Length: 183
Ligand code: IMP
Ligand code: MG
Image (cartoon, rainbow, N blue to C red; front, side, top):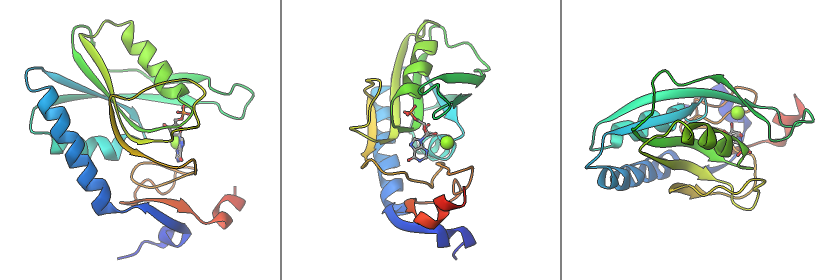
């Protein structure tokens, strides 16, 4: 079945099968690395929502989940400024935290969230990102678990949006240029 919004899709970069295989692969690695620990997953909403839900269910170990909402103000003269709109519900002190991200682009979001979490003294703090746009960094950040390195193009789907749309596509794609002309 095709959704109406799929007409806006230009090129599918990562199909549903390819994404799901990678999610399972990452889950195997993380399950193995954390088998002796209580894993606490922290996701940055909304982009990481879909990835987190598939990833957490693919783990063979137990994990607890918590969420943060951040916003960045790119293009408003504050490039790279990141604000926390919703903080975590639970303390991470002494916990083994894995920060789950949808995409690392310039690196500001991850870097800010990472620093915010680090000072709260978790037992460990690592990063798992589904997508990594290498070559576009403003701030250097290196994820511990890396799904796909993708070219420097705007993508949508599987949690990633363009003006809040396309998050509900099961694959990751570029959009037709006409789509960008509407906004
Ligand atoms: P960074 O702070 O520049 O690393 O940007 C990370 C955030 O920008 C992500 O959490 C996304 O919300 C957004 N973002 C970056 N690249 C894309 C993209 O290609 N598609 C959709 N959102 C993106
Ligand atoms: Mg976004």
